[in-house]
Image (cartoon, rainbow, N blue to C red):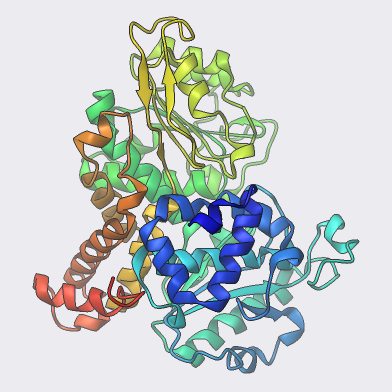
Length: 510
């Protein structure tokens, strides 16, 4: 750790850590296991975004497998080139929507490499069972196409039927090579592909999309944990989500599921709790400005609803209790908007979910300061603890100390993956992510609430992953989806523990 801390920039720390992983995986993962709150932001968000933008400077061969559009017809042979044969989980991207950074093409490989390092570091899944893959179909990023350092295909993206046939062959090759229960996690596909690919494959493959389902699960967990601080149950929240892409729609889907299944609302009643705002304004049926894709239409307000284009006007119209940001528009939650949320609510819920940090809707300090210290806040990127005194924050009666919680998918996807891999769960359903949300929310303690935190400390994240895996396996077994416990609908705690321990034991002795 002394050597790691000696580097001045997070980018240099990332490079050093990845080289350590190449040379000595066990040491790398012991380091992460002992210091998850320090290491995780360096190997994944937010630092991995910078790494992807400069991947030619820090990438070494052998960290992941590139499958190009020119490999069509031979993808199974390409997969067989990977040195490890007992693959249980694959994380795959096509690099078109990397975090909030857009099309990074083959440089998107930093994402599946980083994601799977967290499968191991945060859930203990042995790295030899994991395969990072980037599907290189080209890039529409002109800067990359003109860069002498770009090592991906220098051509425009392949789309349409040729793209679909390529992905089809990849999916079939994965199960043919590694077995029908291999987990295939989609990561950072553009909106127009993410939803349809998930819906196309989620019944016939063991698959999920973390941008849609994992983000939804961690955000919902935060809201399920928030009543201790806000005094409001989920069914009493009115939620405005600035953004209507993968994260927002996934959240809306899972929240609707929770409201109907756990709170007894009808689907229509549940949808009335949610307002989506995209780049053209409030999502309303038949709005003049258009831009209504099929996934947005599910949550469109009825025709005749004012077609508001300004976020401030939407907040005034809805009188929302919770404001979520998922559009990667920096500083969209202005002091005026934060003040307005505090005028409407004694305890407004503010979640600035976009990452990496430069595209966050607001900082933790801004959220607390401009809501007079009254908001309940969580973010997608990490922020340092905040202290405000009455002199700097009008309305405060005494100094406020807050340790903002991070609504990071890393609380969810390692535990979900551990459940799928160890239990051979198929198909993966939205209810698995609802169980993950409820489990995570149940792990928030009074010591967390004391500092305004909606999530357990990151230092506890490995035990969180194991708890989530156990809960999902229990639920999946009751529905006959746990192939590792075939015919057992009510497994004992010992049976579940035996399954989980088999795939949560890396590095050895942890």
